[in-house]
Length: 461
Length: 178
Image (cartoon, rainbow over all chains, first blue to last red; front, side, top):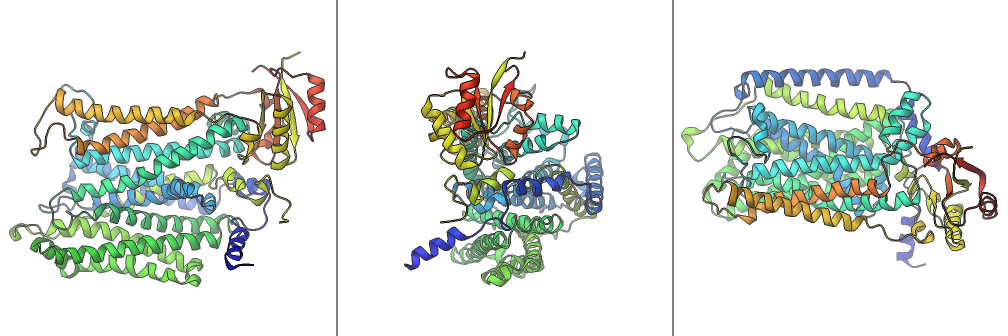
């Protein structure tokens, strides 16, 4: 047997789902997660997340009452934590879309175990992201000025501004992610409907599942819809973070005004998003005993994607410095020396350690399959990617063209608590999702089992 | 007696269902459907289904979305309220690309989901098939064929016998209004 055929056979033999499940055992395993009684751990987690959400709402009310002066913004640094948090959250969302759309187009069947909750993560992360520019405008009650709607002032939004592009890009991203996620849920909601014992549950899932009956005449259209949604989401997800980067890149601030920003931001977004998927997957897998569905192979593959995107991010950091020197532009050169050696050097080196050094450990297979190490690494990468956005936003602004205008930016306690509160918003949504909806796509996992293939001969070749 | 909706038969698995789908098509049945917990590869060909028109619907709406986006921006900045902002031309098409693209995607995705629901005649809360307790398995591990009473070849006895002859089990007559 030639080497190539051997490798191909090994690939075919690789099991996506462990423990030789049947169609029914998949249904049981996934449904039992939301059918069991509410666990104490869940209630505790929900209590914490809910409290943080309340804190967030209270602080937003205070912000609307008092104005953005309660934040640490100062004269050169007019974009602070709110913008940092916006880019951080919207970036996290990207991994969900990558898993559900791009990996679907590439026929990566392993994604079926993790796509559902990665998509849910996208939704809640984008909600958190939309919050920050919303409250950053200060006068929340006139936010409708963003919308192209006729008004008594005869005033229209400026479509030539990247901030408006962003509004459309992120708004579309949220809507499409929601549609994609819900479309994927329909067959599984029908499973919940058919398993429901209580009348009220039957009614609720009966309405939510929209009357799905799993006929091939339905699947036929359904599969086209899923494929096209994936095809539309792929350029969308790549464009969203490119447009977020345009908010920076179309300005003339040194350190922002560069063409490397779109690909650099997109790979950073995927990098940070996978770190967040990994964090959540490791926790969910442990609490709900999903070791056979979310396997070490999944973690291995996610770590490889993080190694790739993390290395692209590291390359972008290096290239920024090279161009700052090679361009001969003194402002650009100063900005980057200032990043590495100036007053925010601590943030810069935190970012570099977490984002460039940590993923390099993923070259080792033992570490890619070591759950504890992965968990620690995913948290560090999340921290590092938040610092990346902080470094980009704040260092460039705090040292602008006139030394007389320079100032050091530090957040106030309100800044910090609003960011902490946004985790409350994220986890409240995510915990409700875990409690009540199927967190693994049952119909898709069943379709990748070997016995789902009509040519399956009971395990014999 | 209630109106007959159709005859339901259960099959063993994906392979048996695929074979049944093909045999029914060759026998000349037209108004039948093969129900399964997940889409089965090759079933469209076996049942002799035409390609879904959904792709064209999506393309049409996506293009409309793109034109709406481009038209809106052009109309606002060139006709409704021409305003010089940072010296850019009124018709600055380069900066219109992004909103045009976003609306192209938005309309396309909307058409994909709502078009899919429309073609599947969903949402609907009730269907005669839901009267069958056995049919609940279809979203778990059940594989079913349902032949509608409206089919030209439908006959309560002979259709049931034919389903049995090709491997159908637990044959059930479904009653109820469509």
